[in-house]
Length: 292
Ligand code: SF4
Ligand code: SF4
View 1: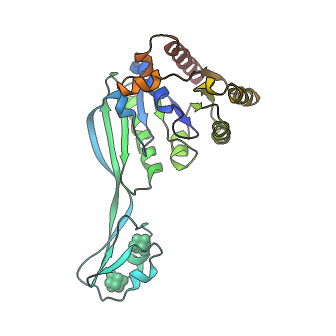
View 2: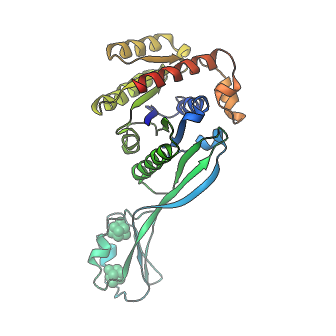
View 3: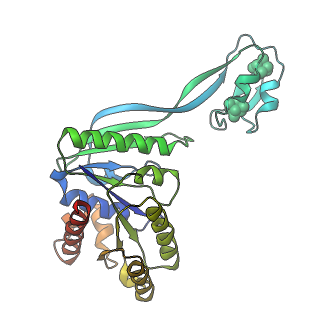
């Protein structure tokens, strides 16, 4: 079983449309993992029927009990995040402001502050309309443990793929190069970088590629909306050539991408012409390069 990760340097480059197209094309061979937990939207195109729903806990949350407080104000004084307030004679910790450092808990002389696991989000395993499994998650409000949730989604997707004897796990990663992306990438077998022909597109691509190179991963690139700026598309192709990165596809700007999404379809279902053909070829090449 091999893991293919689709990512882009920033949001809006078409990463999810392309991942969903691959998910439709390789349906019977893969388990899909939506690791873009901050903005999970794979469910919009896959119409998942939820089979498993679990709370995901990560980090700690602190709460002042009503009894036992001697009103020493120590908790309020030590909190660097102004999370402790004194309201109507009682001390209250705002869970949205609390960073979970535990300083107040340590200094409280009466052990009046309680520590609980923090509910960081929800985690799901679903059946999709493609007849495969989607592992996905939703990060809670103000929860900043997306790296851990991404790791949980990946691990569960790999477990499902092994159980179901699937060839691939296809991962839709978060945009950027932050902690959730690193959590999506480490140990992957192939990475599909999706970019746009703009100055920032090339800049983001080079940062993402640097990360991929450091992690010693195989990769290829899809230039989306390649015709909106042929000169920049040329510079991106030059960058790919210099770094020996295969160009998997050049996709034109096409309103059918958004039309497909508005009808909750993938582009390879919505378009039966040249766009579909390019994505079929790209998916075949991804599989070949992954299996090498
Ligand atoms: S755990 Fe840390 S951040 Fe939260 S209230 Fe206590 S001192 Fe402030
Ligand atoms: S540190 Fe403990 S005892 Fe002191 S004010 Fe805070 S909750 Fe009350």
